[in-house]
Length: 125
Image (cartoon, rainbow, N blue to C red; front, top):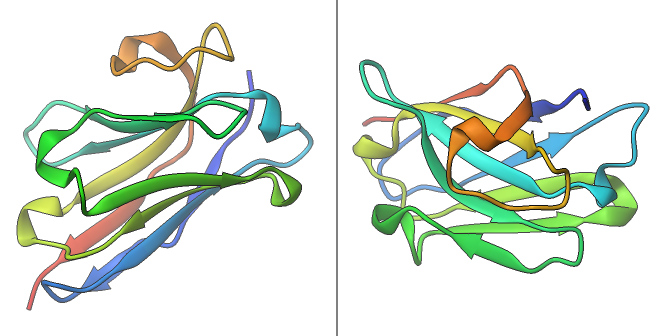
């Protein structure tokens, strides 16, 4: 397993932007596929997007397509989730995770075995 740490969450007004980061210490994140998920209160955790080590990505969540972009900088050992045109319904705890097998992207949270602690994103005026 790999230890993941998210950062970049916070309070933002509707229409604003945030960039979340997912990194690790002591491991080479570049070998892992990394997925971004979110969970709002009272709702199930849902897959947003996933990126493999080459940079190819898959986008899963229809309501955020065209607004959220996953990317990675292997030199910085970091995966990003750029979130633009944020809406109140995007309010949730956002998580990054690594799957098992480590190179394979999946939309299902059950395929991921290493999770960060989460970062809160609140979209409100």
